[in-house]
Image (cartoon, rainbow, N blue to C red; front, side, top):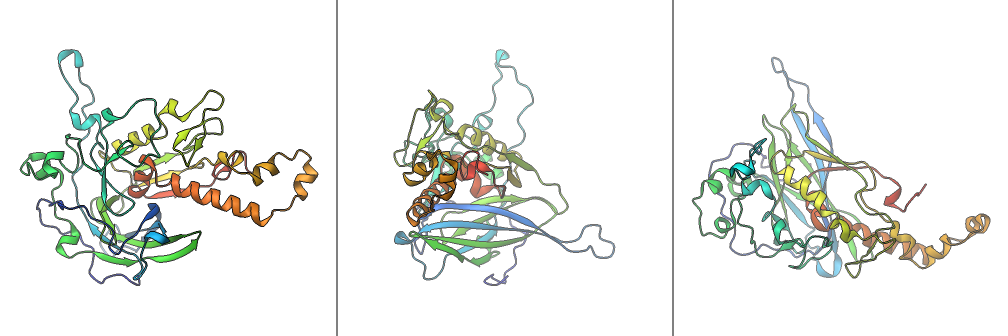
Length: 387
């Protein structure tokens, strides 16, 4: 690859505890994420096995995309991504049975495995998943990005995770067995084994710029956790399978709400239509919390979006010119109506905002940055019953 540091990404690491930074990281040079990061799986590159070797070399291939706000970002130099190993031991599978009546209790780490886990913020810092017990039931908070939402700037979850307990990560108790065992090896970037990838500018419009980073990872004998950080910001990790291993696949579709359960994007409040509201379901995040909880025990190597990863049915209600065209009853007049520059501008603005928001909000945004995706188009990606 061009723009890739010649230093090889390897598996050999010394066992040592990761020291988490005391000050929050931010993008340097500064960036502001309108959407992303979003990671995509694009395929495997396989080489024929050598003589006496049953499995040839396999290289995982993918890409990461970010969308940045031009007025809050610096593009000299172009954004860069550092790719490195960040090994991490997983939570063991939970017990198949336990008897609450006999006083047995499920360990706290299995109740809410992602409580307290980090996620990258829009400015490259770190926010933490709020414990599930701190969330109000029957309320959709997927679009709220302050401490009233799903994430918090200060970690409060004091449960064991793949990163250790909250007090350990604050430097108060660095000798816990959870901390020593769960994060067992030093980050690749700390021992000089990494790849540096320069971003490619894909597209720019309406004050936003789309960037892509092309990735390749050589597979090893075991599945690996690979981390990346953009412009020296906080790191994010994803898992790749072992060489010759069948991928652990997650499939989803219809990831949203139809026109009868619609959002008002700008106000973060839900519109009640036909006596339904996304508040009734606590938004889309309970399902994605299940996905991310399972991901902490048996990581997903790829997630397939089988269609309708986003619901854009609101285009029929939150536009003026396009809604007027939809209301034309005579099919001949409708067919002959001009697609004016003003209507095109209205639709492009609507879809750009919707896609940028949906793919960066809530726990779906977290999953999109940590589980490589393959997505398929379907009707709701444009509007209901589009054909």
